[in-house]
Image (cartoon, rainbow, N blue to C red; front, side):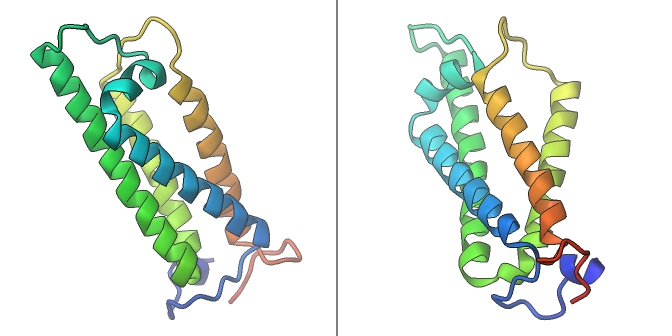
Length: 154
């Protein structure tokens, strides 16, 4: 299993289950799309995605919140582009990227627990995050297995 997570040779050969590739492609596409939307439309993505109420007078607090969302979007976009490079050229690193994704989700939950965002209703982004987390867990397990369903020993 450690050879799957930390391959000795980084190449384009993926030894896990093929469904892990498809899940990784979907996660990559969602990261890139969500990142682009949030970077270039931060003022519009804060309200529907996270249910953050912004005033209509463009106050300094609203501008700061939009900047925070744009920076979060840039982080998502950067991770999505890294995933795209791995998907296209360095597939042997996909199990490691899945583990990076799961660490990101755990850290996000930890930060959200320490610094909760007070909202009146559950944001739509929470549903998307849950779906992506479940896809990440499933993909991680599948990336460590071969076509027969056994843990790959490559």
